Image 1 (cartoon, one colour):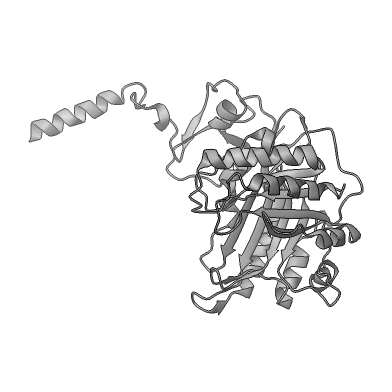
Image 2 (cartoon, helix red, strand yellow):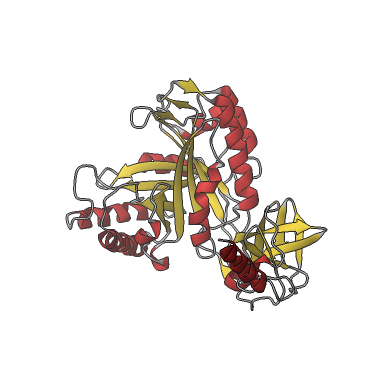
Length: 397
């Protein structure tokens, strides 16, 4: 037994010969077991063309409501009066084959709102059959009667849809071609539910979508994680190619435990909208879903029914674009890109995750680095990078 122990010690010591370093893994050169505070990192790419109706700076706010119209059939002005906030866009939903919401679109135009229409698959029928081609053509022609900026969220992918991805993509592209031919003023949006894990399987391609969308309905509880963490994978996938439309609902009541969580929801509203402006610059429209789904999933997402939620919402959307512009931005723009990796600061020096340089910026692997918390870090200044901390973020210039 003693001989075995001696042999084991000799093996370990021989591995440490070169100046005390482990020859079989250089990641232990400067290994420190605890990870330091992580900073979100941004860098800029070459200027790119703005997408259709994309603001160069800032983000539109919109809203969807299932509130009953007033006596004269109007919903927009009365809903904004209740919330005390103006919106750049209003959202309406229709199933393919239903009547075009002409009066609602006219109200949007009168109130100077951008109409955002969600076209849902028909319930209980094959959503991709040939029988829809004529109806889809008629729907596109109905949109063409209104030569104003509009968005169509076409066939948003729900969780557990069971749809064949190839069939979906073919139908989406067909619809896109019809709208491009008959209603070119409509920006086409491809969107998925937050619970669609394999969302890239359904992406119809860059030419088929002007924007991409992400629908997030979140329950609130004392254990709720940061809501925007659920957006990160989608955001990193599309931020350099498409503007992102976020459709958002935060539940303040659930039939699971029959508890109201107004305080948690007001805090989450402030956190989400603040985080979007600071950390998600390619989210260019946020539509709040002011609806109750108690009969469907047991959650109430309405903010218009509680004065504390109304006040929190008014405060949260400060800094967003609340008016439909008379003219939309055009041309090239330089968009900050959020890195999938992080940085930390130590003794006044900024250290970057080495993968920022090698994977995202396409630079050679730096010669000098250190391992902390199992991650390879490089000194930004030593690597020739101009980096600075601003507003709690690290920016690479």
